[in-house]
Length: 173
Image 1 (cartoon, rainbow, N blue to C red):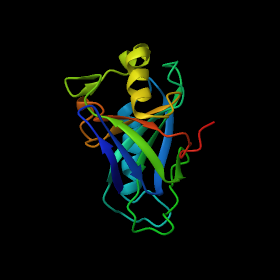
Image 2 (tube, rainbow, N blue to C red):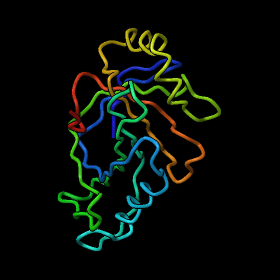
Image 3 (cartoon, rainbow, N blue to C red):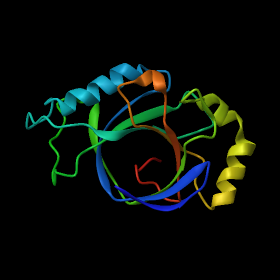
């Protein structure tokens, strides 16, 4: 799924291959469970082919503007690579997203409180975050991604926060 480019105690830099995701949008304070449920239904056959297949981690929460907790966010589940043409979702609020290859700065321990990332702290603590990003190289901080590797246990919170090298694989404005 990815190649590890570098690592230390606080982060990894990874190169991810192009992929296809099934996605939905909600408000930052929207219902996490409702968004994940819609995505799960797609995997359970609520798609044009009626195909059922296993969910693949991670679930990604895309936050396009880290200056506002009122931003619309996008939830995306990685689709298994077995599809050359994934089936279209039945639910109009779901859509397929193709991503290009991407270089990710993955923070797995910084800003992590009891295995939960505190998004508000991340946003307000610009200096510490910027110093990490600057120490690694050029990564975008205008948008970030929370990666959930056990998304059906939402009480655990995000496992990692991702920042991207200067490109926009999810096609955000």
